[in-house]
Length: 448
Ligand SMILES: Cc1cc2nc3c(=O)[nH]c(=O)nc-3n(C[C@H](O)[C@H](O)[C@H](O)COP(=O)(O)OP(=O)(O)OC[C@H]3O[C@@H](n4cnc5c(N)ncnc54)[C@H](O)[C@@H]3O)c2cc1C
Image 1 (cartoon, rainbow, N blue to C red):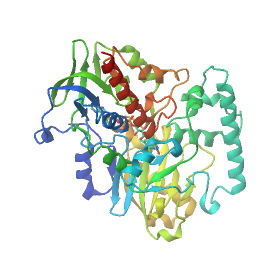
Image 2 (image 1 turned 45 degrees about the vertical axis):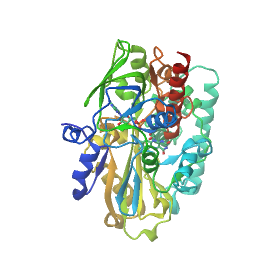
Image 3 (image 1 turned 135 degrees about the vertical axis):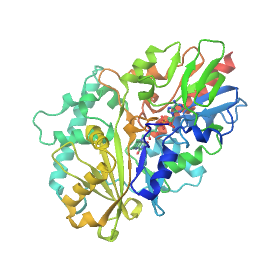
Image 4 (image 1 turned 90 degrees about the horizontal axis):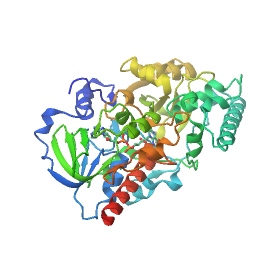
């Protein structure tokens, strides 16, 4: 299909074609090789990301006929591990098991024999103290924590407002507090609801999957009934059964679970007939922010600490954050968020890598220009089946998560990270929401 852009750009010409073929999404030529769609099922699940797979796994022993319709040629959605080299696993989407003590993927990892790494995240560190000495870091963390306390206190009133209202006027750390928001929310604080920020449950325990979070999701989806390369364009719920139009034909279902990212509902790239304006409005109140990652191979890795960290700059919002040698691998993973990530994506392939190398070289010395080789970078806002990274509620729109989650007419059910009341924007929040939607479907069928 013309005009589709892969979520991941592999910065190596040999791999580029393979990458584009596997990432670009629907491909007409591949249709001929795919098994045909069933004409009718009890339950159709739209999207094979964490939410869709959570729903499909929950329905495994239900005795109902189920199909997961997925536009891409792979499962996992915004969870995607690629082997950037034979020894470097790169999670281009989710990487951290956030709130790991409450994260349902922890148990799944155990069941599927995926080793968990419990090394503490280095986010508050600056390796070698370079460009950001300890005393300055302590001062920044004090300002950051004070900002969170003010926003939390304000949220208790029940009124909503934009989080940037709680920055202390004139505080020198404000640009950097905003930078943290671009990583956490995928956008600057003026677009973040304090009620939504307050609803998020963070136990501050963060673990990782050694072989990759995306690889775990792929294993979790391995036994689900899937139709890949199948883009849903219309959900017609005007008749007795729901009619679903896809790029590979039409099928009918009794119940449908929709798990696609909010931006696709908001811009009606997946349509409902009759239309569902309340869902479209809710999705517009919960846009996906942007976070992008870049993976750089590192020559002479022993010169840098395992699981170290660097912030590219301190006094501005437009800067990267760099995880040195994740799991001890010979590489550096860069992370960019918000409007800076958008500008880098828009600047074209290779811009994230170039910026990352500039920032690292300015901290560690120009020698590093020679020691770093770009391997891959994500482009989530240009990905036609994501159009962003994770949802945040706009000021005044925290209640939209519940509106988006509510079923329609006992036949259309909604899941996906944006519908999670307290673990939104995460992979486990998405998975749990899929399970919740599956339970709603079963309860409805039992009632009727
Ligand atoms: C860079 C980045 C870093 C992240 N870091 C973390 C992290 O460390 N920890 C964490 O927990 N979370 C993280 N996340 C967020 C996490 O990845 C997502 O919240 C989660 O994976 C979303 O799952 P989902 O099922 O709701 O949506 P998705 O994964 O987007 O799944 C939806 C599926 O629907 C498919 N689809 C879309 N349109 C159609 C259509 N028309 N027809 C058929 N199928 C369609 C898509 O292809 C996709 O597979 C990160 C995300 C990104 C991008």
